[in-house]
Image 1 (tube, rainbow, N blue to C red):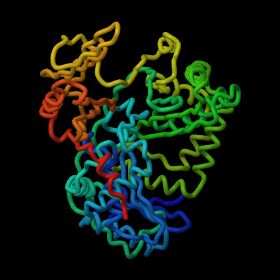
Image 2: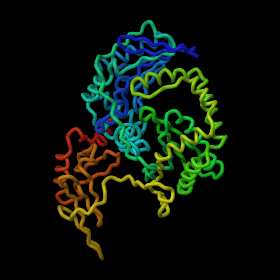
Image 3: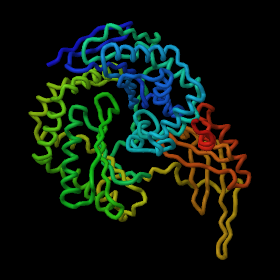
Image 4: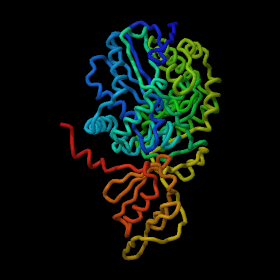
Length: 495
């Protein structure tokens, strides 16, 4: 069992071990997507990119990772190479020099990484946690291109301080290490708010089927792998309804992980795959996990944790737990627990998490009437606003045909903006608008605190521009962002 060593370096706590092999060193900050307010979505990832751009070319193998709760800069090489890299990170943070052109170029790089996520893109974490906290990890970054240099620099000054950092190494810290970070105390982490607290069926804008559960961190990795096996056996091996399952595990709160399993049925198989996936999870909770699935969970855990690099992850996990909370168990203890794992323990963990069951499916799929109720789920269509009976009044438009005449209207009052189209009124509370984006062409797009989005176009309404101007006056300025980047940024490509 490798030793764990603790010391400090220029007032920064250091955690190291003595794993054989090439040295890996990291500086980890306790800030991530979960800490970002809605109007600054994506700012941590952008800051990471801009710090690397300001550092210039680095010859050592290196990378940066922005996650829900942390930002990790790391390098692998000789002690001098790792020291040079980390020293450069810290000197750039102390004096971050980047330009508007740097901002534009890195926005384009981030968009290239994940084009679909450059606009509103609610995913599994967003469905549960909304457009805040851990939900931001799957929400897209629609405000990214409107962030200013001053906002990014202030974010770095606020969060990238010595008290909010940890240095980790896989062997002794390099002699040439000289990491100096600004003094100060980072703000408290944002508290998570769960929007879904009962079993729910989500009508998603994304393809496929997904199963999601909140699981105690002491059982989450095993449950992920065992449930992956049960679903694969039922949907892939027995029925041929899917090709694969993509599992994901995310820390959402100290001591609690979200386990997601994303299935990929063909459109014609989706309804059947959805029903069988729900049935498999519920039947497994009722009857218990099979010995094959438990054995798979054991073998995956023992196989991965027996590798030397598992101790690298453990050291980084210790740093993360100190920065954001949670408990970390060393690989040897996990291996011992895995070998003792049985179906009863794992089944109890699944039953305990069933109240958090969330199932997402492609909303384009037509399901039988009463489908959600049949499986004990609440249906959430995940659309912004609520259907209301607001009185018909205000500027509007009239549609006429050979046999009909319909009057639509858009108006705003003290608490809501109302849109009445073809006999149905949708009302959105002004307080529910987390971000209001201005496209600069008379139209606006909003995202609410749950991560749902919709828009209004002034040209469609008589006096619509006045209604939208009033909407802008009613939303706090910090929640209003420039969305005209989608035209502006593409008019100028990098040389």
